[in-house]
Length: 195
Image (cartoon, rainbow, N blue to C red; front, side, top):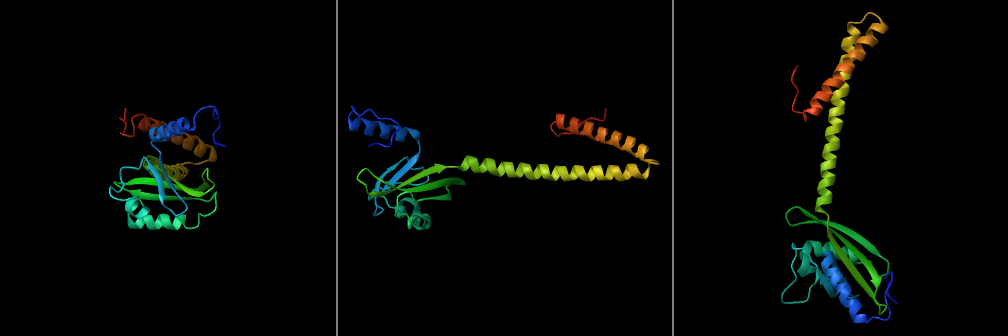
């Protein structure tokens, strides 16, 4: 039985196999499969920061180096039961970030295999970093604006004789502040002419 949404049982198995392999290669997704001894069965679409060994079968050590292979060994060490999974994020190459997802599952012969997928998440991490920077900037500007409003309130209170006089002047100053903020924003924060 295939774990597919649908499969035409009248078609040849090799046709299904060939089509799935082509789809995998075209997807660009890195997929690696290891047997229960951790020997590689296949490696597809390995990112260009790592190289397949030319003279021997791939191992975690000769694919990824000692440091990363040790981290992968730690991640995989308790994955003997089907359904086990783990994730590891690594920096490699020129500030590139890759996410390793390891799953323990059964093959069609009911043997435990490890499937590892590698996905580059560099763009996502850069977007997250940019968003954090923007949020810090918004927070900083908000605090500056609150300090200005506090100063306006104090200055207005100093020169107001009544509560109604304070409210009228303070509202006017807040309105002027809001208009100046619009002028600066409309000019892409480059400043605005006094006129």
